[in-house]
Image (cartoon, rainbow, N blue to C red):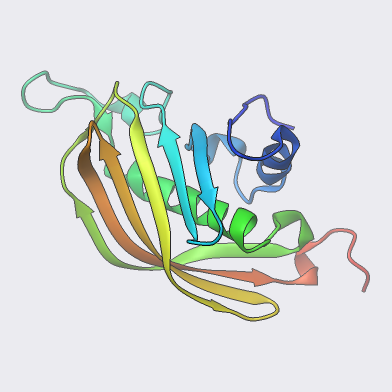
Length: 174
């Protein structure tokens, strides 16, 4: 199990299961808190503590006026994947430990509106705008909006696919 608690509207054990079976090490999951999961409207709100040790931002060489310390573009894209994974698990029941895998497959639009500075939290919203579901496949298109101090820092229109295969489950019957 992990040594990181991510508060949210679910039992702690459910997030432990999510992280324990996540397809990447739990340190790549940058979301600090899940604020709400609205299954009916297929929307998740979360938060990123920008003071946490971020994998790329930690290597910045900030300059007070020219290049302030900020959440990097690659980290913002990583967070869209984290949010998509939350949708797959909590809204669609795509559980990694039951053979589901997924990946982002298209970025239709990625608008980096302003720097997300280190310090104030980043408010994350992801909303499904289109979903196609089959027995062993889910394709989702998302709208992402990440805000800091009430101002949009990132807007994205992206899609991801999730597949289930018994080949990915260690104890699955042959």
